[in-house]
Image 1: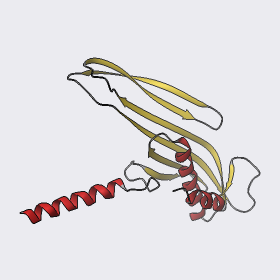
Image 2: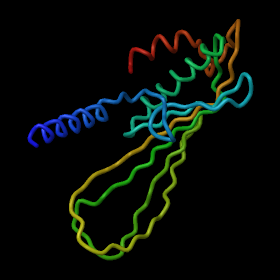
Image 3: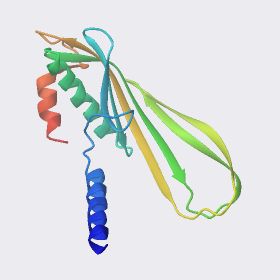
Image 4: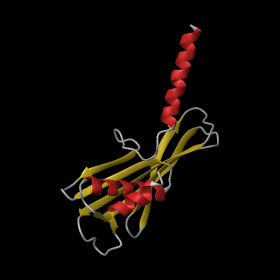
Length: 173
């Protein structure tokens, strides 16, 4: 019986270690964390990256890295970012004990090429019991609409050489 318990503990520990060590840059499964893309036309894609935390730069870098990979995988040289959005969804659990009726706001920030817009959505909850503790959970999503191309890259601040982007951003993950 002791051997079975030791084996079960070992398996549980290895499973937890495997889950904790998943890299941030990975393919998303079933809408989970990681990257994904949707083919819109033969040369247009929407690329997504969803991660934990609120680091907008890292989320955008991972979305750009995936855009470069898609471009190269499809046999193209460069891509143009037609539209970009970054959204942060935060949820804070109170550190103060509380009971009864509470109203929380979920803040969502949408960023385009030039400006950002933040909106707050109210959520009312009726709580029974005492809640103690505190945590903040954040999820960040970055989405890019890209146009793929070959040959001479357009002279624009929104066009990128896929090989250079991949080389520069691959070292960050």
